[in-house]
Amino acid sequence: MNLNEPKYRLLYVEDDAPTRLVTTMFLKSHFKEIIQASNGIEAIKLYKEHNPDIIITDIEMPQMNGLEFCKKIRDEESSTPIIIITAHINVEYLLEAVSLNLIKYLKKPLQKEELLDSLESCFKKLEAKNPSIIQLTKELYYDTFNQALSSDKKITHLSTSESMLLDILIKNRDRIVSYVEIENHVWADTYMTIDSLRSLVRKVRKQVGKEVIENISKTGYKIHLYG
Image 1 (cartoon, rainbow, N blue to C red):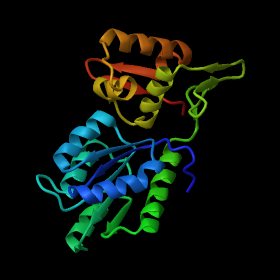
Image 2: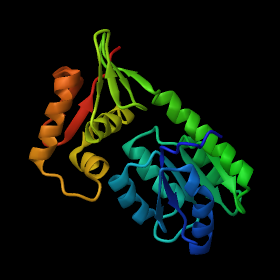
Image 3: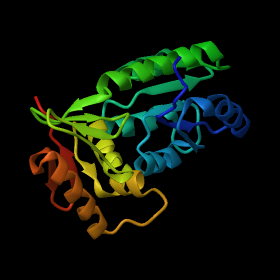
């Protein structure tokens, strides 16, 4: 696995604290960030706050089990790669997991190589959906790694906040991205005002064109890519 430059966020859901600690320690060098949850209800809240790229979840958990949690996620969107883990192979669970379009169904105790192979599948799926060069318009391209716009005439480097806005819109290109999601992704631990959001969108639109980023009144923004 090419993990020299981790760039993805993982949401890891596991009710057993020692297991969660050990697995997180093993995976921390593979991800830009690991968000931890101890049950499905907490995981839904964290999913909405952090917009993770990949989810790993146990099945057998209190309050809300892993499959119920996955169903909630799939009600929102269908593309986030999900790996589900269980201590027991159950045919009913397996059939539900298949219907939820999960990447892999792993059995405890986790085998390191099997987990890494499953993550490799997740990374490939994300790369296929989010290539490093994105065509925004007929003549304008966005380089996600170098945070730069390019055309026949020039190359323009974006600020961190400008590129982060484009990144979350591109990642969720098939749906509207809410104001809260943008705030959690771009502003992180600081407070976002509606004026600061509008100012950021104006700056990006000035670079890419107003037609690329659509404002959905009182909801959020949606990106329209070329083709």
